[in-house]
Amino acid sequence: MSQGLPVTFSTVREGYFNPPPATRSLRRTEPLTRMEFADGHLGWLVTGYSAARAVLADARFSARGELKHPPVPRAATLDEAPAAPPGMFIQHDDPEHQRYRKLLVGQFTVRRMRLLTEWIEKITAERLDEMERLGSPADLFEHFALPIPSLVICELLGVPYADRATFQHHTHVWSSFGESTEDVTAAFLELGAYLGGLVRLKRTEPADDIISGLITADPDLTDEELTSIAFLLLVAGHETTANQLALGTFALLEHPEQLAALRADPSLIEGAVEESLRFLSIVHHGPTRAALEDVEVEGTLIREGEVVMVSLAAANRDPERFPDPESFDVTRRAAGHLGFGHGIHQCLGQQLARIELRVGFTALLERFPQLRLACPPEEIRLRHDMQVYGVYALPVAW
Amino acid sequence: MRDGPLRVGVDRRLCCGAGMCALLAPEVFDQCDEGFVVLLDPAPPAAAHAAVREAADQCPCSAITLHSAG
Ligand code: HEM
Ligand code: SF4
Image (cartoon, rainbow over the protein chains, first blue to last red):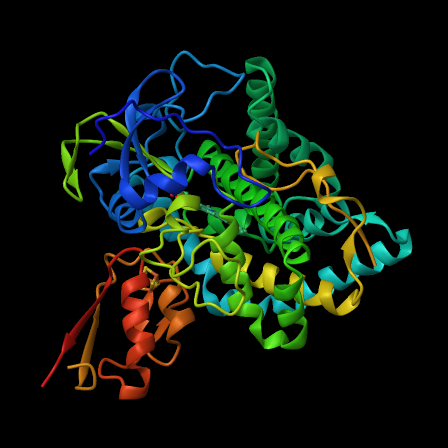
């Protein structure tokens, strides 16, 4: 265990893709380190792969929001972290968490998601047509990476895509570290109110979508619960994949030999998707968990009440698990990475995300054999200050 | 050991429906309509062992158990 000063965590990466330099030396020597949280709480930072898995798989570590401390500073400050509302199951422990998750897993199975492939290919092709209409150069984030997962999750949930300006804006404000308390709270409430209205509409006019399906599957679910579930799926379902698509494209363009390998053998795509999830680890601060009792992890005692932040980005570069971890290598076996987390909260939408990414990268490279950045890489604005890492825009030419 | 028979068990109460098993070893694991694991082959052939071991390792909820039989 560390005898030195506690570290603080920064979401600022080294270069465009590498986890903060401080985590690199730590994960070699100290898989668990004392960390000072943004509010002064003395907790822990986990940078080792096996320790990360151990924490995330252990029910003695709670995901409840009201027990946690913020790992990085935000402009918006709340006196106390609020308890997650019923239905916001990413912040519940079992059995509450399980009650909601089990209603949903059937919607996201490997098989069901594969049935969506053709439809996702069609949406993707339409976005590429649109980019061609706009002409080179164009912003890949705005015209490709963001619309694809937004269209997909809207259709699955039954949220009108025409309302995207509203929910994309609220999601953006809500996940930005720089926005004020008033703005973050307002975004949260407005998105909740919007989705609440939608839930009430689905009760009277059900359609073939997840929200309507939940109403039928469990008539006991309240409007509040349904609204929170819709909130979680909508937010988790579009920002993440959008950033992964754009940042993944950026990474391929900055590693021309990897791009060439993938172009030469498109069957590498599944491995390339896993590698891009490992290498980029866009969920870049957290998940965090609070110890419900004293727990020993790999010889280190975590006291009841202490909060642990798991750096997925660092764990995914652990040399004990991934040989030559700093290199981006689309031919490596990256399976087993923690980009989707681990344990009972492991990403519900991961099989959907995998297909969106596979289809997205494949179609993009096929359509534009000359794809390249339309500006020097240093000019690309990076989302250091957002809950999910990525780029604000990716100007490309073809 | 590695090449001997392998017995696979699943605990559906632990399964959180992440689908890693069905993705990695589809000839041995499937998911039911509700999303939870279905064991297709409790004694998979040697050719599938590597994939099954990987699925057991990656299952986020430790719902898959392996026994080297024999
Ligand atoms: C590349 C894309 C994605 C990445 C990197 C990602 C990453 C993650 C991670 C790391 C977690 C675990 C959080 C924790 O342990 O606290 C998570 C949970 C979750 N994700 Fe994703 N995600 C992606 C796409 C999606 C999509 C497309 C959906 C759409 C439905 C989704 C829905 C969820 C939900 C509902 C949870 C909470 C699960 C639970 O608490 O049981 N995600 N995701
Ligand atoms: S990998 Fe584990 S949790 Fe996921 S479906 Fe299979 S058995 Fe269930």
